[in-house]
Amino acid sequence: MAESVYKIIELVGTSSESWEKAATAAIDRASQSLRDLRIAEVVQLDMHIEDGKVAAYRAKVKVSFKFEGNE
Image (cartoon, rainbow, N blue to C red; front, top):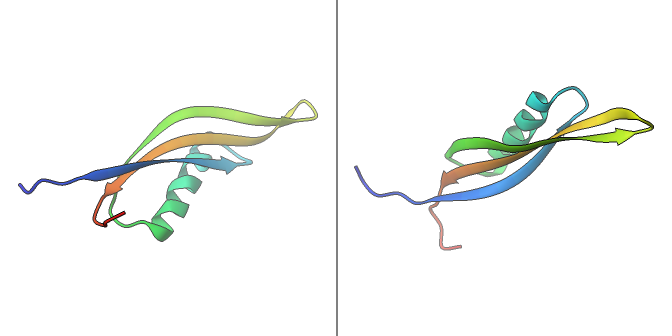
């Protein structure tokens, strides 16, 4: 098997419905501009509160993808 290098970035997805949808939103957006996504790890969950009620669920996600460029 050939050697590979992967880059890891951190994203925050939001949803008014759930943490799962917040994490999915982050991956959906990342897949629009990045190729070869490999692993996503949810590292933190929190909520935005307004007037004593949950306004948004937030999921911080680490995403890895195959590194190909000279960046």
